[in-house]
Length: 555
Image 1 (tube, rainbow, N blue to C red):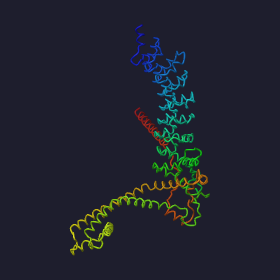
Image 2 (cartoon, one colour; image 1 turned 90 degrees about the vertical axis):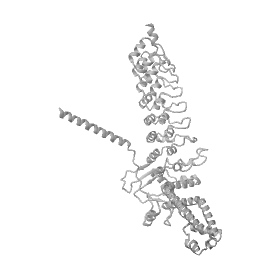
Image 3 (cartoon, rainbow, N blue to C red; image 1 turned 180 degrees about the vertical axis):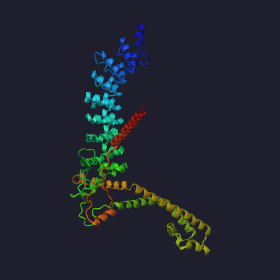
């Protein structure tokens, strides 16, 4: 008998007794037998884990109940292992909500391990919402506990992409704080490209609070609005969709209107002025739109809210829902922007830049062939001097070769000093300059035009943003306060640019044709999933019904 007691108390290389392994496997009979031999439940392995640590870590609810049955104090419940993790930490880390509930009922404390993590931190890291709910229902204050890096459970859930865990913590009024890197949970989600977490936050009733928590002095964790533009533009688009509020009237009615809210499209004007409210922090005007241009977010720049925002900067809203530029319209073109002409101006600019860049190449060819023709054909008036020869060569480059007068007639009259060399030089010139070089320039121009057409919309909006940014930098703050608008109302079924045939024709040919903006489609993923489940359920019922009919026939 004494030999058996020695065996059940023996430890392996890891310092574990048979009771440790019995608790790990969750075998109640073995646990009871070992406890009958008075095996200590306080025995520790080399990493300072007790049998209760093993049972809690593997979710052995019955084993935990048996170990805690004869417990006289809570010392066993709150003992930490080598890393300071209690049985509650281990149960929460692995999502064993029943074990967590049992340990809390028995008096487990909300302690932190050596890294400052609570049980809620561990549960949030794994996204175990049921376990989190058990912890939160017991102690709601633990939502705001910080680890050594200043992270809350929200940071952990957001970093790992657990959208449901984030929604649960927000519902339990978890504080939105910055960690030691000046990052909120939303920054963490955006930088790790956790799209579902960001969308859940944007759709939450506390979304405005989440967007406002950031440090003005952090270079890497800026305003979440700007961070979304850079890392998750699709989430920024959803936020823009929420800024469009249609009226309840019929869409074909003259009174139907859409309100566009610009609140989160630009920072408050006070922050663009040095000195207030922050002494050493200033923001560029139109900071959000400039970020969209910088990161080539054409889908955001082309969003109805952004387009209306730029129009608001240009036009003055009138009472009847139309627009006025502030001019009286003495001339037809007053107040109009020649947007359709802009692309041709940009094309001309790009082609001129390409021509200037390629000038270095063909100038050397032009001078070389011009001087060569001067040596070979100097008896002719057109090539009598180096300068005239170069000018004639330039004319030949454009197609005016004048073969009959410059080469054929002198050859027939035996006036060419070097006939063979002259004709060979002419062939080389024709191959290199009018054919190769000119086709090269045409190809570059065509490629540039295609590139301009491809990015014309981005280029146009970028130029508008640059114009408004430079203007607002120069204008005084009191004037910007006077003309800036937080929102605007558009009546899509009313004339937007005044009445009259001439105005309509002018706008048709010279201004961008604006199509009435419809409300963007809402997220139909939930509806699609419901329809899929419904279809599967109908198919299941149909198959069951067919089997039932077959059984009836056989009977």
